[in-house]
Image (cartoon, rainbow, N blue to C red):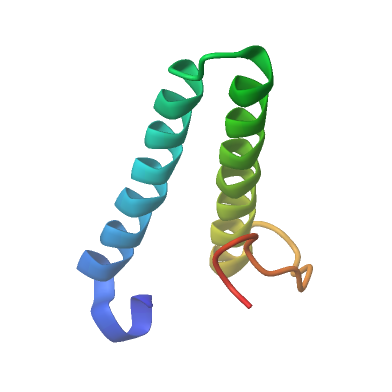
Length: 74
């Protein structure tokens, strides 16, 4: 994404990952029961942590692992 759209595209992707994270935690906080809250937090943290690792691999901070982002890439 960064090659095609540069800094603006990269910042947009980062913004969207942050938006997904904060909206997911907001939804988890509004869940009516404990199970719903834990499930929403689990899905949100799964996407958030994998996004951080993916960004780390792309920038060369972490070694490559070959696992795609859950629910986003195939």
